[in-house]
Length: 308
Image (cartoon, rainbow, N blue to C red):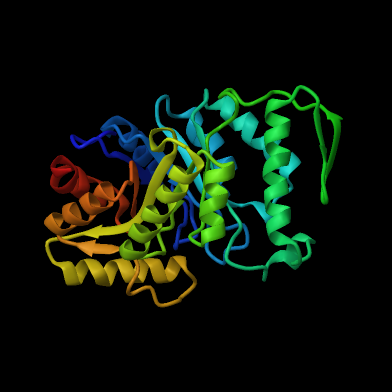
């Protein structure tokens, strides 16, 4: 949805279930409600080796696309080095076709290499592997006979069909906050999203930084996606909101202390913070309730979004 200020809003979708049981009725009701309320897109994360009951996002989107008609779907972010880019390119193109061109692809390099042995890949040359994987997918999506002679993969007149429905391919939104990551997003991507685990202050600084890199590269901000995922809890009692948000994020992040992550706020304070992000250049905000998803969606619709 687009607010009166022009800010576009997406919303996270339930993906992790502490009860370790999938509630199909709830998922259907939630995604259809998000679509009917006018949210622009629904977002998932990736956690292939998460200890939590966490659904795989590409497969999940194929299911959600079949029960919706307008809502776009994004993943922020696919940890690309733990995927085979040839197989992933095929899966994503297939989902873009099945969803009638409603897929947004977020890619990131991840926080570390601890899980690499489980995927049979070395820790060395992780950035080179990451960039080459992106080029492999782009080649398969855009070239009739893809050719690429890289360090890790070789395409020699390789054919892949169907291509994505969106041309030249699905929007590629990058994650990461370091200077190399931000410059890479400008050089190789169609957009950038600030992580939910970063503070508002850090995200504001990164927005300023990447806007400078866009200007250096001669790229128009209007043609580049600038977004922020924000874990949010809105309640008239701010202390209660913080307690619930911290508990939910502690589960999501494997028990680590998350007492300083996200926005736990009264409605008026939430409006203020989200407005600050918009003024700093964010064109899109991914609102991420972490608990009581349906109720939080109602609170946002009734007490926060009309004031944006």
